[in-house]
Image (cartoon, rainbow, N blue to C red):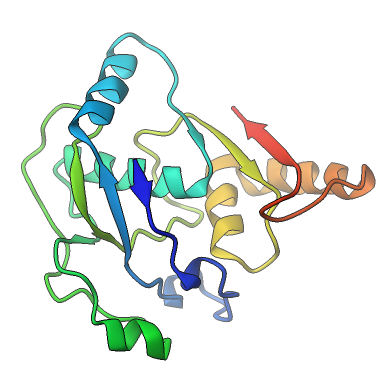
Length: 176
Protein backbone atom coordinates (compact mmCIF):
# COMPACT_ATOMS: atom_id res chain seq x y z
CA UNK A 1 0.00 0.00 0.00
CA UNK A 2 1.35 3.40 -0.97
CA UNK A 3 0.26 7.01 -0.60
CA UNK A 4 2.64 9.78 -1.63
CA UNK A 5 1.92 12.51 0.90
CA UNK A 6 1.51 15.99 -0.56
CA UNK A 7 2.24 19.34 1.05
CA UNK A 8 -1.47 19.98 1.66
CA UNK A 9 -1.40 17.32 4.37
CA UNK A 10 0.69 19.71 6.47
CA UNK A 11 -0.89 23.01 5.35
CA UNK A 12 -2.90 24.53 8.21
CA UNK A 13 -6.65 24.74 7.71
CA UNK A 14 -7.67 28.39 7.54
CA UNK A 15 -11.36 27.97 6.74
CA UNK A 16 -13.80 27.84 9.65
CA UNK A 17 -15.81 25.19 7.79
CA UNK A 18 -13.58 22.21 6.90
CA UNK A 19 -15.65 21.54 3.77
CA UNK A 20 -14.17 24.75 2.35
CA UNK A 21 -10.60 23.38 2.67
CA UNK A 22 -9.20 21.67 -0.43
CA UNK A 23 -6.54 18.96 -0.52
CA UNK A 24 -4.21 18.37 -3.42
CA UNK A 25 -4.54 14.99 -5.06
CA UNK A 26 -2.07 12.42 -3.75
CA UNK A 27 -0.96 9.32 -5.63
CA UNK A 28 -1.88 6.05 -3.97
CA UNK A 29 -1.85 2.35 -4.72
CA UNK A 30 -3.52 -0.63 -3.05
CA UNK A 31 -2.29 -3.88 -4.57
CA UNK A 32 -4.59 -6.82 -5.33
CA UNK A 33 -2.62 -8.93 -2.83
CA UNK A 34 -3.05 -6.43 0.00
CA UNK A 35 -6.72 -5.91 -0.83
CA UNK A 36 -7.24 -9.69 -0.70
CA UNK A 37 -5.57 -9.90 2.74
CA UNK A 38 -7.74 -7.06 4.07
CA UNK A 39 -10.90 -8.64 2.66
CA UNK A 40 -9.98 -12.04 4.14
CA UNK A 41 -9.35 -10.45 7.55
CA UNK A 42 -12.75 -8.76 7.42
CA UNK A 43 -14.50 -12.04 6.48
CA UNK A 44 -12.73 -13.77 9.39
CA UNK A 45 -13.96 -11.07 11.77
CA UNK A 46 -10.53 -9.57 12.44
CA UNK A 47 -10.08 -5.83 12.98
CA UNK A 48 -8.56 -3.62 10.34
CA UNK A 49 -6.12 -1.36 12.17
CA UNK A 50 -4.47 1.40 10.16
CA UNK A 51 -0.95 2.50 10.98
CA UNK A 52 -1.04 6.22 10.28
CA UNK A 53 -3.50 8.62 8.74
CA UNK A 54 -2.23 8.09 5.19
CA UNK A 55 -3.14 4.41 5.47
CA UNK A 56 -6.64 5.45 6.54
CA UNK A 57 -7.03 7.60 3.43
CA UNK A 58 -5.98 4.77 1.10
CA UNK A 59 -8.18 2.16 2.81
CA UNK A 60 -11.24 4.41 3.01
CA UNK A 61 -10.84 5.42 -0.64
CA UNK A 62 -10.70 1.71 -1.53
CA UNK A 63 -13.75 1.15 0.70
CA UNK A 64 -15.78 3.79 -1.13
CA UNK A 65 -14.87 2.18 -4.45
CA UNK A 66 -15.79 -1.30 -3.14
CA UNK A 67 -19.16 -0.01 -1.91
CA UNK A 68 -19.97 1.39 -5.33
CA UNK A 69 -19.96 4.95 -4.00
CA UNK A 70 -18.37 7.90 -5.79
CA UNK A 71 -14.76 8.24 -4.65
CA UNK A 72 -12.48 11.26 -5.09
CA UNK A 73 -10.03 9.30 -7.25
CA UNK A 74 -8.67 9.94 -10.71
CA UNK A 75 -6.36 7.88 -12.89
CA UNK A 76 -5.11 11.18 -14.33
CA UNK A 77 -2.44 13.03 -12.34
CA UNK A 78 -3.10 16.64 -11.38
CA UNK A 79 -1.55 19.46 -13.37
CA UNK A 80 2.02 19.75 -11.99
CA UNK A 81 1.99 23.55 -12.43
CA UNK A 82 -1.03 23.80 -10.13
CA UNK A 83 0.64 21.64 -7.49
CA UNK A 84 3.87 23.68 -7.59
CA UNK A 85 1.96 26.99 -7.49
CA UNK A 86 0.03 25.91 -4.40
CA UNK A 87 -3.36 25.85 -6.10
CA UNK A 88 -5.77 23.09 -5.16
CA UNK A 89 -6.40 21.52 -8.55
CA UNK A 90 -9.70 19.95 -9.45
CA UNK A 91 -9.37 16.44 -10.81
CA UNK A 92 -9.89 16.48 -14.57
CA UNK A 93 -11.56 13.05 -14.54
CA UNK A 94 -13.82 13.80 -11.57
CA UNK A 95 -14.76 11.14 -9.08
CA UNK A 96 -14.58 7.48 -10.04
CA UNK A 97 -17.64 5.34 -9.57
CA UNK A 98 -17.89 1.59 -10.09
CA UNK A 99 -20.46 -1.07 -9.21
CA UNK A 100 -20.45 -2.35 -5.63
CA UNK A 101 -18.34 -5.48 -5.16
CA UNK A 102 -19.45 -6.73 -1.74
CA UNK A 103 -15.81 -6.64 -0.58
CA UNK A 104 -14.45 -4.31 2.09
CA UNK A 105 -11.87 -2.85 -0.31
CA UNK A 106 -10.87 -3.12 -3.95
CA UNK A 107 -7.36 -2.73 -5.36
CA UNK A 108 -6.74 0.54 -7.17
CA UNK A 109 -4.06 2.91 -8.36
CA UNK A 110 -4.78 6.59 -8.78
CA UNK A 111 -4.84 10.08 -7.33
CA UNK A 112 -7.08 10.54 -4.29
CA UNK A 113 -8.42 13.75 -2.80
CA UNK A 114 -10.27 12.07 0.06
CA UNK A 115 -10.46 14.58 2.91
CA UNK A 116 -11.73 12.96 6.10
CA UNK A 117 -13.24 15.21 8.75
CA UNK A 118 -15.94 14.79 11.44
CA UNK A 119 -19.09 13.31 9.97
CA UNK A 120 -17.22 10.90 7.67
CA UNK A 121 -18.66 7.36 7.73
CA UNK A 122 -15.74 4.95 8.09
CA UNK A 123 -16.26 1.73 6.12
CA UNK A 124 -12.95 -0.11 6.55
CA UNK A 125 -10.73 1.11 9.39
CA UNK A 126 -11.64 -0.12 12.89
CA UNK A 127 -8.53 0.98 14.78
CA UNK A 128 -5.85 3.61 14.29
CA UNK A 129 -2.26 3.98 15.49
CA UNK A 130 -1.25 7.59 14.92
CA UNK A 131 0.83 10.48 16.21
CA UNK A 132 -0.40 13.43 18.20
CA UNK A 133 -1.02 16.00 15.49
CA UNK A 134 -0.88 19.78 15.44
CA UNK A 135 -3.98 21.98 15.72
CA UNK A 136 -5.81 23.07 12.56
CA UNK A 137 -4.33 20.22 10.51
CA UNK A 138 -6.09 17.81 8.18
CA UNK A 139 -4.48 15.01 10.18
CA UNK A 140 -6.11 16.15 13.42
CA UNK A 141 -9.50 16.39 11.70
CA UNK A 142 -9.14 12.82 10.43
CA UNK A 143 -8.31 11.57 13.94
CA UNK A 144 -11.22 13.58 15.36
CA UNK A 145 -13.55 12.03 12.79
CA UNK A 146 -12.38 8.57 13.83
CA UNK A 147 -12.17 8.93 17.62
CA UNK A 148 -14.76 11.60 18.27
CA UNK A 149 -14.10 15.05 19.66
CA UNK A 150 -14.54 14.24 23.36
CA UNK A 151 -12.20 11.23 23.39
CA UNK A 152 -9.63 13.16 21.38
CA UNK A 153 -9.74 16.15 23.76
CA UNK A 154 -9.25 13.84 26.76
CA UNK A 155 -6.32 12.10 25.05
CA UNK A 156 -4.67 15.40 24.16
CA UNK A 157 -5.11 16.79 27.67
CA UNK A 158 -3.39 13.68 29.04
CA UNK A 159 -0.65 13.94 26.40
CA UNK A 160 0.06 17.55 27.35
CA UNK A 161 -0.02 16.73 31.09
CA UNK A 162 2.42 13.83 30.57
CA UNK A 163 4.63 15.91 28.24
CA UNK A 164 4.22 13.64 25.23
CA UNK A 165 5.94 14.70 22.04
CA UNK A 166 3.71 15.81 19.22
CA UNK A 167 3.87 15.53 15.45
CA UNK A 168 5.59 13.13 13.08
CA UNK A 169 8.48 11.99 15.27
CA UNK A 170 6.68 12.16 18.60
CA UNK A 171 4.62 9.79 20.67
CA UNK A 172 1.69 7.84 19.28
CA UNK A 173 -1.73 6.70 20.42
CA UNK A 174 -3.76 3.60 19.60
CA UNK A 175 -7.47 4.27 19.12
CA UNK A 176 -9.76 1.23 19.19
